[in-house]
Image (cartoon, rainbow, N blue to C red; front, side, top):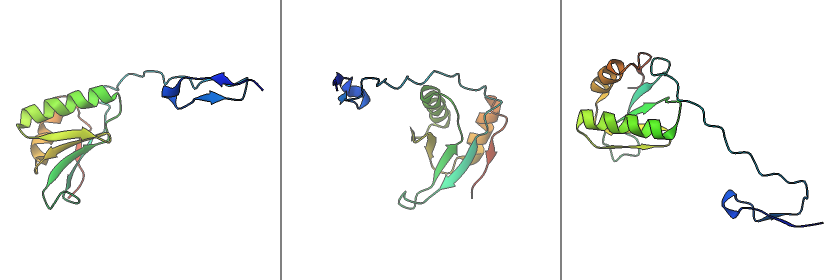
Length: 115
């Protein structure tokens, strides 16, 4: 059997299968329109040292679009936060302000979901 060298960046060093094919890269899909998105706003205090954090979940689309939305939201609120694990995390209890801003930006399917 012949050994085929493969790209190490994809996790394959070599394959002993002569018919081996690399996985096709995922196709880029467009981010759905804002009025189709169903975002949910949560207040979480677990694993945060007792401090409240507003978490926006349910965004579907590109990671870059999610980061851009998080950046705009943090700038509007004037608070800190982060975008990780497909969630936008904003410091403090900002649920009402976040809801108002997201609806103004066209995310009409947004609701406050937790606590």
